Image 1 (cartoon, rainbow, N blue to C red):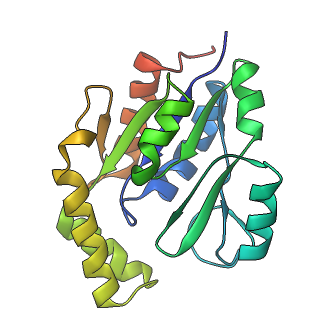
Image 2 (cartoon, rainbow, N blue to C red):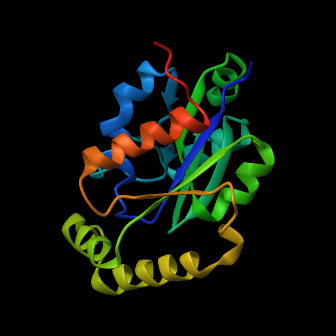
Length: 190
């Protein structure tokens, strides 16, 4: 039986990277791989455990068919390595840090995809973005507006979309994520 793709998405600053890192070991224990994205951002950038490549290297990999999924967002290129297709065929579940704007394309390619939207109270999100220090105030305000626009988009309000609030304690969010996966996609292997 094939594995299931778990597609985690949310606004920048919602805590996706922290959640993924905190849940990595329990996910692996449940037979769920956590994939590293390829991004045209310096590997020294603070945050996500990603593979940083130059735009030229990303384009070369894309031409070679190295990505199962790829998209552009916020001036960067993002790719999910093709190895996920092999993992899924082997019956392993796979968690990816996806893009809200690419959800329709990902759902089309992976019809059993489990979409999870990480949401955060706006004041918490603003504070996290300020603390992170990657963007200036105008860029942060633009991110918050895009997040509001996305939240208001009724096409995203599909019955299969699970919303996971990460405004509070990270350990509680990890527990809710693992429970959601146990119920919908990734039963305990023990």
